[in-house]
Image (cartoon, rainbow, N blue to C red; front, side, top):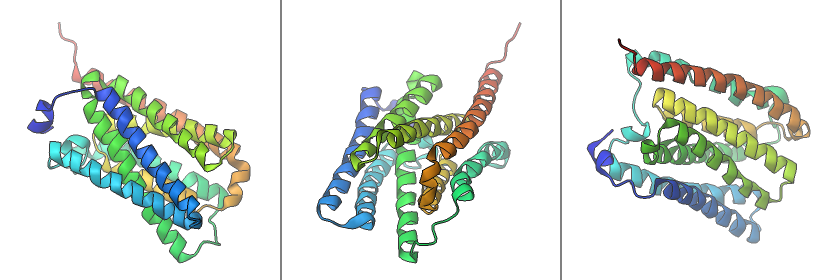
Length: 257
C-alpha cells in the first residue's frame, strides 16, 4: 500500500462507503428515468445507464489514483509467479458465469449492435462496481478488519440492488436479485481478501453480466431453478473460500512456545 494511502485521514469510512454506493445507484437511476421519459427504448436506457456508470468510473479512478497512483492499494496489480495458486481460487467464477447460458442457451434474436452494446455496458459496470465495492470501500474500511469489510460490503451491495424495483420488476424478481447480489458480493469480497487482486473480479463481473443478458429470455420462466443452482455454487464456493482464508490468517500468526 502506498504511503499516501496510509497517511490519508480515515474520516467516516462507513458513511463514506454508504454514500459512494448510494451516489452510484442514484446516478444510474436518474439516467434510466431520463431515458425512459425520453422514450429511448431498452437500448437507449442501457446506453444512458452505461454513460452514468462511465462517469462514476472516471470519478472513482481519479479518487484511486489520487491516493495511490499505481492503484495497487486497490488490487490493481499483476500476478507474480509465486502467486499462481491465488489465480486458481478464481477458476470457479467461470463456472458461475456460464450457468445461465448453459441452461437457457443464447438469445439468437439479438443483433450484432445490441450484443456489442451489452458487452460494452457490462464491461463498464464490472469495472465501476468492483472498483467501488472491492476496491475503494475495502481500502477505506481496512482499519475495521477483513470480517467487517466482507459482511458490510456484501450487505450494501445486495441492498443497493433493491433499486431494480424502480424498473417495474415484481417483488419476487427483486428479492431474488438482492439475495443473488449479496451472495456474489460475499464471494468476491472473500476473494479480494484472499488474493488481493481485483482484475479477475472485474473480468468475472463483466462476463457474468454480459452472458446473463445474451441468454435466451425464456430462461426467466425458470428463474427460481437457476437461482437455486447458483446458490448451491455460491454456498460451496463460499465455504471453500472461508476455509482457505481462515488457514491463511492462521498461518500469518504462528503459535510459539
